[in-house]
Length: 150
Image 1: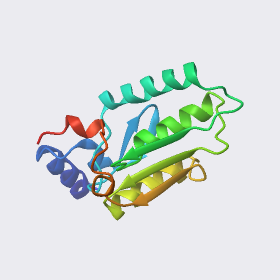
Image 2 (image 1 turned 180 degrees about the horizontal axis):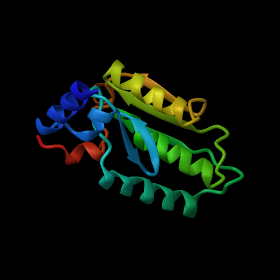
Image 3 (image 1 turned 120 degrees about the vertical axis):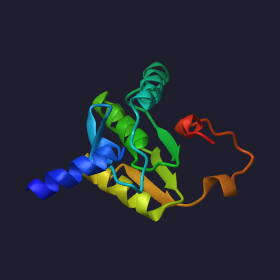
Image 4 (image 1 turned 180 degrees about the vertical axis):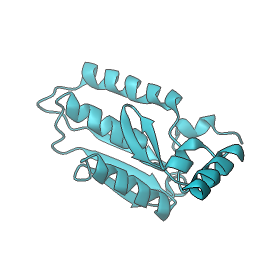
């Protein structure tokens, strides 16, 4: 036990993020598995869920909602899954819509799929391996990735 505690403390003293050490991170009130294959969800990204939820509530009817969400660079899936959970919680049932997460990393997609299953929305979310930028180069993408240093 002492060796394990020492190892954990050493990792933290070496500036390893706590989320990687404990293996999970809270986001939008939900617990997400994280590891070095994904970025750790940041609290400031929760504003995207807030804004999306407000748009949802002011533009779509709960009975006939066909919600389609595309999360490029999905990583842990925290944005896609949180929005999906929130929409379900608010009573929006997707009939013909899609929750789609795309990432260039198969290992990141495995984390996202695990999180979707843990949070009971795996049946609503699809995850695809691919480079969206390469295929759709001309499209504008404003995402959480804009906060990363170049």
